[in-house]
Length: 311
Image 1 (tube, rainbow, N blue to C red):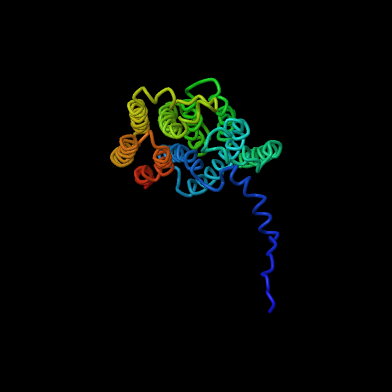
Image 2 (cartoon, rainbow, N blue to C red; image 1 turned 45 degrees about the horizontal axis):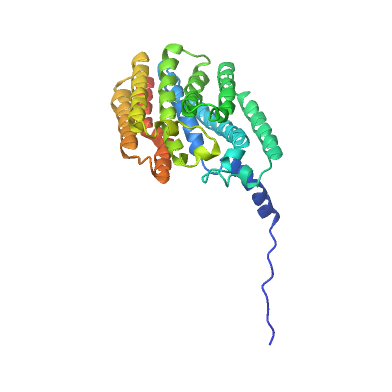
C-alpha cells in the first residue's frame, strides 16, 4: 500500500510581488480609503463653491475632481509614511498600532524613507498638471502634514494642529478651479474644515487614551477625558456649522445649500456626538469613520446649489 503526498505549492511570481508590496500598501494606507476621503471632502467643498461663484461648466469640474482625489491619495499616503517613521517607537507600545509595518519589522526604517521620497516625487509630478496657485497652495500644506506627528510629543493639542492641516483642502479645491484665492470666502470655509477635523480627531484619539500615557503620547483626549469632552465636541460642531453658514452667506448660496447641506450636516454631527461612547474604542473608531462619508451627506445640497446656478 503506497501513500501519496500532495505537492507543496510554491508561490508564483505574482504572489511573491503581492507579498512584497503589501507592507508598503499598508504603510501608505492604500488598502483603505478612510484618510483619503477625509482629505478629499474639504477639496470638494472648495471646488463646488468656486464653481458656483464663477459659473464654471460641469465639464471643468469633471476634470478637476478626479485630479483632486488622486492628489489627496498621494498626499495622504506620503503623510502616513512619515507619520509611521516618526512614531515607530510609540506605536510599539500602543495595542492598536503595534502591528503597523514599521514597528512590526515588515518594513525597515531605511526602506520607509526611500518609499516616502518616491511618494513625494510622485506628488510633485502630479502638481505639474495643476495651475500655479493650486500647486503652491498644495505644496504649502506639506510641512503641516509632515510636522503633525511631532506635535503629540510636546503638546496635548495635536488634534488642533490636525484640524489646521486637514482643513487646508478647501483652499486647494478653490484654487484648482479659480487659479487664485479669495479670503473673504476661503477664511470661513477653512475655519469650518478646521473645526470639523479638530472634532473627529479628538474622537479618534479616545481610542488610545489607555495606552498613550505609557507610550509617551500627548493627546487631546487625555486633557478632555475628565472635562466634559462632549461639550467641547459640541462647541466644535457648532463652529463647523456656523462657519459653513457664513461661507454660504458670503457666496450668496441658494436654498439648497442652507436647507439641505447645512441641515443634513448638523443632523450628522449631532448624531455622532450624542451617540458616541468615548469609553469604547471600537465605538470611537466607528464614529470617527462616519466622517469619511459625511461628504456624501453634504453633497446633494452642494450639487443642487451649483447646478441651479449654472442652469
